[in-house]
Image 1 (cartoon, helix red, strand yellow):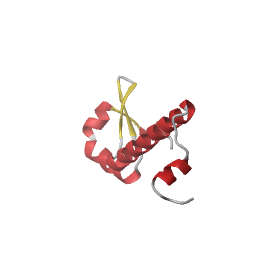
Image 2 (tube, rainbow, N blue to C red):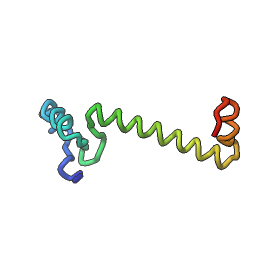
Image 3 (cartoon, helix red, strand yellow):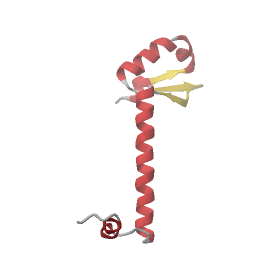
Length: 88
């Protein structure tokens, strides 16, 4: 993705909002909104935003699991299976 084509000043966003909303929905590429030449926000479609949130949640779970493994606070899978009467 080339972000240089996705950068729009806030004045452009104000005058072309409907067009930009259609664009991000169709292309699923974010628009970077600038104010006084400085990047201030990113406009993304709802589907992409939800997908990013789900990915972030999974990454948090993985990070927590890594910390538990490092701390030695995990339980061997065999013990868990035995607790539930599942044979491995």
